[in-house]
Image (tube, rainbow, N blue to C red):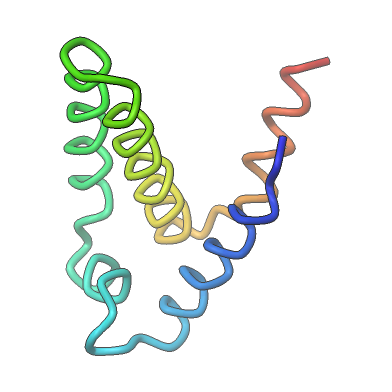
Length: 92
């Protein structure tokens, strides 16, 4: 699995957590404590797209869900590498 882009994005998320920027969407989500709400919203949108839309919309919504999940785990001080390790452990 290609994880380089996930790591790059996660590092930006961590930077926004450590160094909030007023104009940053991620900084606002973290400051307002809304990451969990966005995960729920994006999960619902992904399921709806999977049932009713084409492949491109499913891809778009899956990317949104993955992104917002990374924001949520960063908010909770969980590192992406730990989640990836858990997935590797389950693969064995």
